[in-house]
Picture 1 (cartoon, rainbow, N blue to C red):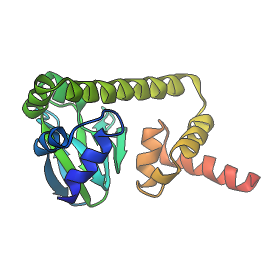
Picture 2: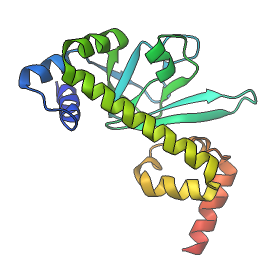
Picture 3: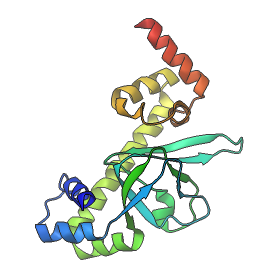
Picture 4: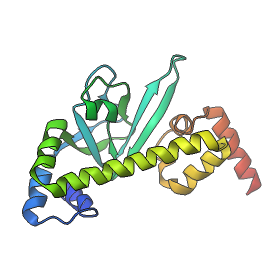
Length: 195
């Protein structure tokens, strides 16, 4: 399966596996397909899987007391997504996770991930590395949210992830950056005028 090769190639960026180890690792993943707008995880249900995006775009969001959606995480090709609090602690989810595009993903269950980690230290090392990278990314995001202006957050996002802008609707990008769609439009228009 082509998707198997994607996850094998991805893990190879972080740890060196033998052919047998690569096959063992990939065997715990199942290819799933989601249609645009399909719900993948929802609040009050335990997130039983984490997802490696082979091709597509997925977002995780919460709905505030004001009824507004607030994007917490975006994921495209070669990125991971889940409601991690729910997945790691195996408790009810607090976020919605939905497909923003038709998406092909590889899912691994919480139980199968634990089996892989217990079976081979290389697998455990891989999951530790992606957890550390995820934690570092979340910390950078929190720091930018509390120290940067909206314009600076937009500039940083565009510089770091220019490919995401065309993959998600403007309201999703705005909520991810912690602003209204109208304010994001204003920032973009001001930027265009300066250029």
